[in-house]
Image (cartoon, rainbow, N blue to C red; front, side):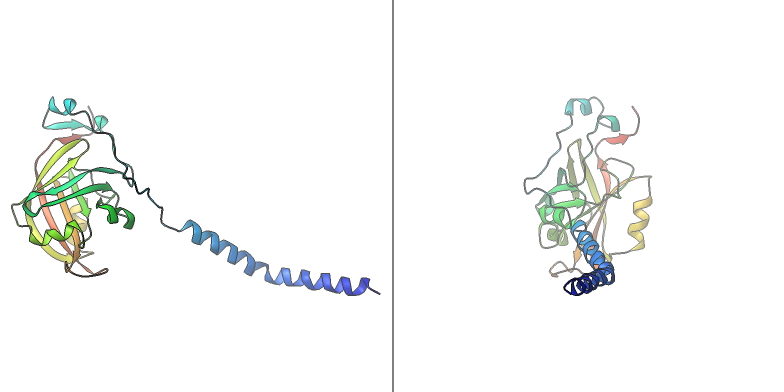
Length: 214
């Protein structure tokens, strides 16, 4: 009879599905995980925050209240990093993803904003503008021209350290003085990732300090 072979065929397909279901589910889940794990793609057009009203700042050049600031979101450009002594001038973004560093300098989001008490940590590729840091010297001035104010930092130290140096971790935890650290891969002419970084340390010498409450 034709019915019996059909029943055997259906039973066979059912058995294959039951046995293979975990594999099928794993493959499907892995594909979804892969798609969800892709890095976000930022628009090629640079996103900028509106400039803070300078008139508000001019009423008190020493301080600015956090309530007056439009803080940047991840991936937004909110200023520039400038060092006239080495002709460095590069856009500054909030965040330090690979996509951001292809467009300019990126602030580590675990560090404070320029003008806050603590350390601002900014990275840049050695093949681009930050490669000029090899020629910078102690006492040179670095400017952070943020959307809410201009800040000048004077360099007090330049050092080549391991990328996981404890000194950097400690400086990121301090909340007593406004500091800036710029860094890039070292050697400057290296291609690809290395374990060493060229760090430039600087203290704030001019610019309005951010206060939490008005």
